Image (cartoon, rainbow, N blue to C red; front, side, top):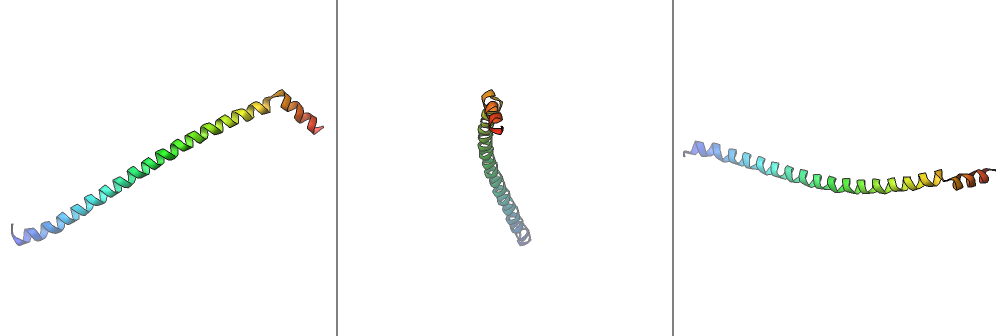
Length: 76
């Protein structure tokens, strides 16, 4: 190899190497964000399940005849 070819190849290899390292870092960050989103989604699903259970209990309380009668008595 002559000096001209080396002068061209060295910066080219450095640029390609920097690009590959940059892409690997980006991919790693995306995987980390994806894992965090998965964990957050699981927590939200769990919370939604708990909230649905609470809503069911509240609906039962509100539709209970004794509760409605007590409410009417309290209004009078």
